[in-house]
Amino acid sequence: MINLAGKTAVVFGLANKRSIAWGIAQQLHRAGATLAICYQNERMKQEAQSLIDELPGASGFQCDVSSDAEIDSLFAALKEKYGKLEILVHAVAFAPASELRGDFINTTREGFRTAMDVSVYSLIAVSRGAAPLMTDGGSIMTMSYYAAEKVVPNYNVMAIAKSGLECAVRYLAWNLGPKNIRVNAVSAGPIKTLAARGVGDLTEMMRAHAERAPLHRNVDQLEVGGAALFLASDLASAITGEVLYVDSGYNVMGF
Image (cartoon, rainbow, N blue to C red):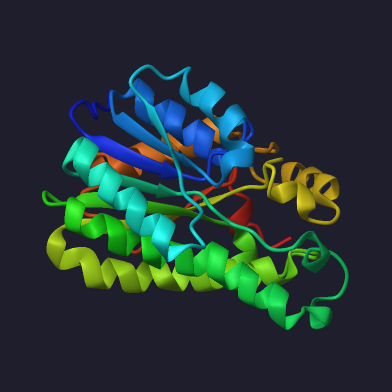
C-alpha cells in the first residue's frame, strides 16, 4: 500500500464531485497526504468547500490560475502554512464552449489564446511557484487527453492545448530534474467532468471509447486518481517527462 503520510499535496482544479481533481484528492487523502485543494473563484467556493470538508485535515484555497497575482499569493500562503510541498496536481483546462463544436478552422484568436493560457501556461506558472517549496524533490502531474495525438472531432482547440501541455511536461521535466522534481501527465479517457461537458457529442465520444477500448468500458475519476497516486509515490521515482494513459487501452487501437 502506498503511504504518503508526512507529504503535502496541492491540487488545482476542484469544481464538483465529477472533477478529476476530486478523484485524485480522494486517493491522495486515503494514502495519508496532507491536502491543499484549490478552486477557481468565489462562485465555486461553496460546492468545492463542501467536498473538501469530507477529507479531514484538507484545506481549501481560492486561486484563479490565469492570474499571476493569485498564484503568487497562493504559494506564499502555502509556504507559511506547510513550509514545503512534495506533490502538485494540475487538473485545469478550459476553452470557450463555442470553440468545442463545429469546424476547427473557425477557431478564434481569442479562443486559442484562452485555451493555451488556462490549459497550458498555467502548468508552467504553478510549477514555477511550487519548485522553491519542493526542497526535498517532488512530483508534479497534469491531465492530458488522447486528442493531443490524434484527431477527435469537436475537441478542436483543446486538442492543440493538450499537445502543448504534453510538450510543456517534457520541458519542465528537463528543467526541474536537477532538483529531483518529476513532471508527468496522465492521459485519461473521456469523463463527464464540468469542463468536458462543453465538448460537442461527448456522449458519442464516450460510447465509441467504450466500444473500441480493449477493456470495453470508460474510466472513472478514482481510476485516474490511482494513477496519480502512483506518480506521486516513490514507486515512480525514475519516471519523468512521460504521458501515462488511463483509458482502458483505447490509445493502442488502430480502429
